[in-house]
Image 1 (spheres, rainbow over the protein chains, first blue to last red):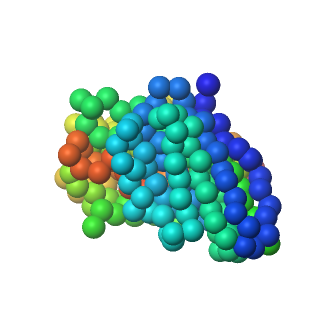
Image 2 (spheres, chains in turn green, blue):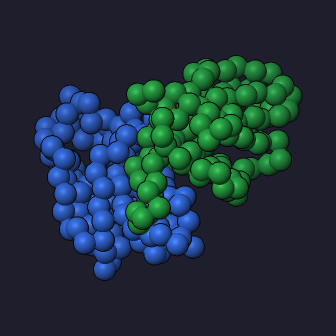
Length: 118
Length: 114
């Protein structure tokens, strides 16, 4: 697609329910990132996928959070047994990375999925 | 520890005025520094990229500077417009061999009043 697509754009759920957030990265981008942004705060890194390598899960706040990336493209972020403190905007970004490049290429962000846990 | 600090946290200016946003970093090994603009309710969008050898780069009314010795960058906005109201985020990436997870600053919230 032309850009990074995220769905749903808005999700309201009850405490204790599970939610799934989807990210369609830019075609051909091998790197995919998930971030969380609470109201008025900066971006908090959650997880990073690069090609077929094992993901870097160092930013996941608890074992209720998990993510997968199927076929090196679409990614799903799952939050189990949601809590009110999970309410935030979840942003996905993709990037191309030539192994010969030094550093990270430009991150292209989706519009985010706004999660509200009641 | 790799860190990116931005100042001020927030800024209010009148339309037509200039302003400068600051970014200090301790990221190493340094590869590049990007300034992103995040409009309310939208995802961040890259404005400029600065590599180690670059001192100044302009993108329209936006001019970024980099001093790799002091590990400081600034973003100067000239003749501000209402549409410049947004959060401006400084993001530093590590060189190859380091983590490919860039380090984000907390952002500067800019409000431009008519």
